[in-house]
Image (tube, rainbow, N blue to C red; front, top):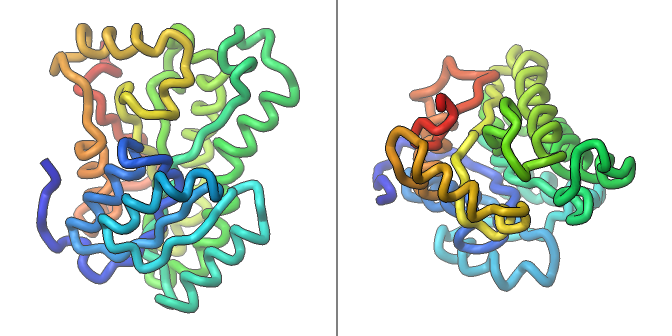
Length: 257
């Protein structure tokens, strides 16, 4: 169930990383909008546009723009459009991860230099690039969120090289929180349990991760994208104005097992 209140009324947010209506970022966008925020939604390519457009329409996105985070010109264009339309940005959700399939499905020790570099650039450095552009628009402070996973802390079977990549993402979150704290910009990571999304389906033996979460998590069920969205909405709201540099687990308690 998506909460329906106005505690984000007046806030403007950028949501990056929606692949389709089942994405974590889509769940967050739905709760952001239900909580009163106005949104800019991006899509990665023309091929993905048709899958993201229904989400953008459902949340009444004020801006719907292409954004390949490896394209610096396109990145600048997105923030220029936000500045022109709103003159400010209150929050940013970065929900992006990528690794070439052959590197993702192999042992960490076998990961190629090229594959590791690409995974780090798209999954981690893209957060830094977006944060740098968001900073001058967060004139009254703001919040930056990214999406991690328990495999950043513990070795999870078949998560492979994405474990070290997510560990780097969480460390980056902490360092950004210190860099941007003087501007009253808070930076936090969301860490959901395994979810049946298109991105997660690329992980080898993903069904086993799903079953493990259902069996071993204290709540004995999977998290939903709406529940992740509820945590995200709380973190970008004034209710969490003293929370920064944190990794918030939304996994039914699975991370404590």
